[in-house]
Amino acid sequence: MANVRVERTEDGGFRATNARGAEVRMGGGDEDGVFTPVELLLAAVGGCNIVTVEPLTAKRGHRLVRLAMTVQAEKVEPSKLGPVTVTYEVELPSEEAGEVFRAVAERVHEKYCTVSRSLQEGTEVRLEVP
Image 1 (cartoon, rainbow, N blue to C red):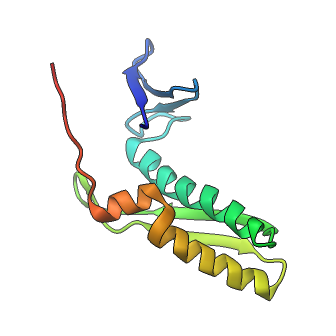
Image 2 (image 1 turned 60 degrees about the vertical axis):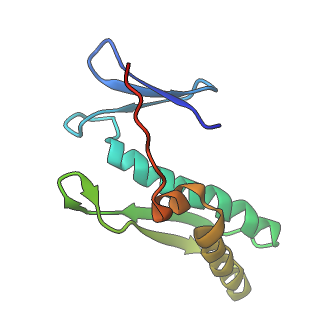
C-alpha cells in the first residue's frame, strides 16, 4: 500500500512525507521553492514513466545518452485539468536504440505506469473525515 502524510508546517506551508522519510514542500504557487499540488501530480506522471522507461530500455542493451521529459496540462475548469501531455527529450546512441526506446515508452504508457493508468481510468478518491 502506498502511503504519504501531508501536514501543515510551523511556518504555514505544507509538507508531504513518505514512510522512508523523504519530504517535498508544497503550497499554493505564490512562494518560491515549493511545488503546487498540480505540479506534484504532473511530476508523478513524469516520474512514473521515466523511472520505468529508463531501466527497461537499458535492460534491452540501449543506454540512452540523455533522457528527460516535460509534462504539461492546462486547467479546463477552475478545479479540473484537461489532457496531460508527456513529451520525451532523448539523445539516442543509435537508430536501433530509438526503436527500442519508442516501443518501451509506448508500452510503459499503455500498461505499466500506475500513475498515468490511474488518471486515465479515473481512480476513485475517497474522503474520510472525523
